[in-house]
Length: 355
Image 1: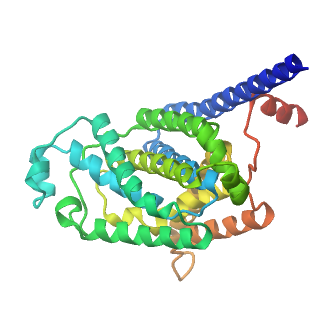
Image 2: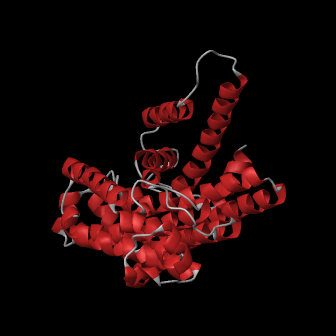
Image 3: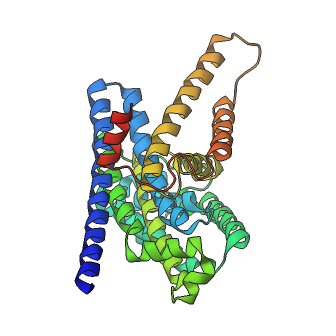
């Protein structure tokens, strides 16, 4: 009997590991195929859209690490994206360019000059450190107090980024950033973060965090340290957001603090909610789907605005349609397009055979 139980346990672990490997491989193939397609298309505009999609995917995966596993609606994610963006730029910008772009920069930082990857990781570490400090208190909150506190934190981060002139150039654009984020860097980091997010989801911490998500009282009663699980997830989420912010900063090369506020947060949140916040597959598919819809309506909005078919401007049409799509998805499938089951090779085969 004991041998049979051990055999069943080993078989269960093997099936779970095999399913996880299949999920990672399928999603990586999808991302790499998109990157290869964009490369051979050769369109500069399409290339930029795909790079921005990969950056958004990193941010969505970072949000899924915390929000998807804890079920806490979390707004300050793009705030940590902004922290990572500014920190990585300060680390990577040459001293001469700092004299031009950041005239009031503190002397201790003016001579600092790192390569792109160390600067990117350094910016992510800064985001994670700040998250670790503020998360000690915030991770003790539940439900509406946690959501309200998170939104307040986003406001605080935004105001600091907007007014800290020596570091961020204040409300003015921070310019002179060297472009380091191209298609290869975008897809590489997206694939790496995808693996990290999935491994965290299936880790012991991820399982305990989801247990607290499903039943807070029961998980606490069996010894799960909910605050610690949330704090760990939050720090990792902020680190990933910092990576996304650094890639964005070295892609767009000129930006203000407004790039890391409500508009960007709504887009990232829509990608995760529409795709399905509880799965990595949902985060990937939601990002791809929303990118296609968003760009389609943006092109339509630009066409209607330039053609002068109507006497009024269609400003905000993209955001309105995306909001309507989000409402419909929440009404039809409250848990998103992909609810609980991750995409696997066997699942793809069944889907193809069914069709």
